[in-house]
Amino acid sequence: MAAVREALPEGRYGRSQDQRADRRLKIIGSVLGAAFLAMIGWFGYDYVAGQDISAEVIKSRIVSDGRAEAHLEVRKELDADGHCTLRALSEDGGEVGRADFRFDERSERIDEIVSLRTTARATAVELKGCAAGG
Image (cartoon, rainbow, N blue to C red; front, side, top):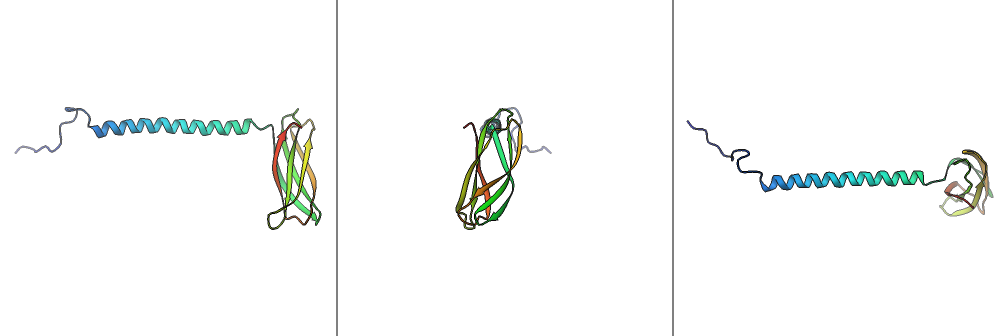
């Protein structure tokens, strides 16, 4: 008895169009994926390396109806000057106080408790951002 063959012999007639298209799509997908990962890496590096001053509110405390305090940790280059903006928020999320604090000390890390005057009772203190220079 002879075996019946349903498929074409491998390699005899070349690749099919579907196999060539699949290979091309895999190559294009790999190149685009690698480019996307490189772009995300570059954006992350540029964001981190581009900041001269960064800060974080460690904790905050509402002292009275007219004042709030925040423990602020600032990290900067040794000779960098700059300022950070804090704002106090009411229970409904409205702003009840805002203040800028300058950091001119020749230190890379500054821990400071700062005080904000408020127009009404605050429930939270938020760091808006920091900037280098005047």
